[in-house]
Image (tube, one colour):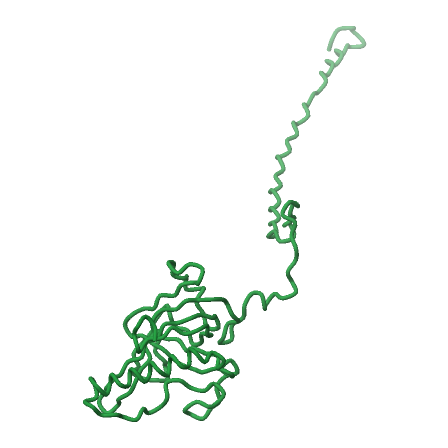
Length: 242
C-alpha cells in the first residue's frame, strides 16, 4: 500500500525495459491495439517487500471488482500480472537474460503521460534522451479491475517514474563509456591544443591566368642618301656643254 491507497504501490529500485514513457506506443504485432505509455519493470526477486506490496494491491483490486464491477462474480484471472523472469513467456519462449532473477511486470497508461524525474531533482522532468530501456528507477503503479465483455480481470496502471541511476541500455544500444573504453586520455587544460591535424584540407587556389602584353616593334626609319647630280657632258671639240 502506498499513500493509504490499497491498490497503489511504490516499487523499490528496479530496472526498466521496453520503455515508452515519452510517446505512446502500440505494438505493430497487435492490430488495432491502442497506443499507450508503458514500461516493463524488472523487479529483483531479492526485493521481497515490493513483491508482497504488489500481491496485496492485486488482491485489493480484485476485491473491488467483485464488489462493484463484476456483480459479485469471482472470475479466474486468465494469466498472472507478474511473471517469473526465470520461467517462460505465454508463448513458451524463455525471457531474456536481463530478466533472470527478476519478477517481470508491465504497467501502462492510455491517457495520462507519466512524469519522469531524477532522484536528485524531483521537480524537474527529464529530457527524452535521458529516458531509455536499461536505466534504473522506482515507479508508482496502481492496480484496477476491468470488465470488457467476457474478459474480466485486473490491470496494472502506470503512475510516475523516479530515475535513480543509469544502466547499460537494453535493446541493442550501447553507452559511450562502453564504446570508447580504453580510449580515454587525460588532457591538460592549460596546454595549448593543436587541432591542425583535424583541420579540413585547404583548397589549392587556382593559378592566375597568364597574360602577355602584345609586343610592338616600331619600324626602322627608311633613309636614302641624296644622289649627286651627274656631271654635265662637254663636247670635246667645241668645249661647250652638250
